[in-house]
Image (cartoon, helix red, strand yellow):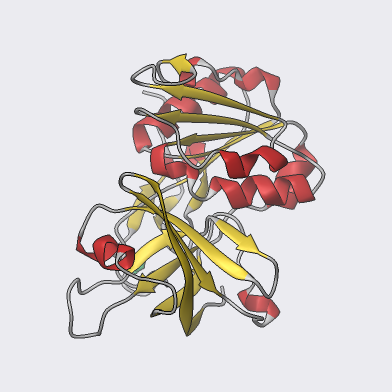
Length: 259
Ligand code: FES
């Protein structure tokens, strides 16, 4: 894995929903080994080394706009670090370390056949770039997304998806219930998912029942993001693995149980 450390300039900060922001930064032309892809993330820091929070914030890549263009992050404001990120304005400078992690292999996924992409809440963040890369590989996926209440950020997915199906806990839009209530894995050759653990566990269970392979992108608290501190280690069926370096994308059967 190749990760770079760099300072980047904020191009835009948009409010997408009350606690959801979209941060766009100038990424510029980078060496090919630093070309980010879907499912990878960056460690973001917009405060000094001596300031709190101590740790940088891992944020997944929402979209890469052209090789020399911009990096877009979609994130939820829910603590001191993300509040400081949300205070950034165009022209401000922040530090990035990354791209980190293994991400999704969209070309390999596209080669499998029909692909469903399943997201929940802010877990939709890495799925835009994923759908984009799948579409570029000739395989527009079907997107299934679950939200508690009003959906957000879905318009950007339209050009890259064959269909979009929405479920909401509140019934504010789409199917009234869990996203697993509208997913039929047997219609697909591969399911890719990112969202709350309980949702991904449910998605995995449905897939396992139908014998459909499933890849899941995990979220963990991270200190270094580079495989050095072992703070994000998770216990998989093939031994301990770091979510930041071995993941965040894993075969679902390695990290979830059927129970
Ligand atoms: Fe340090 Fe993953 S965050 S090893």
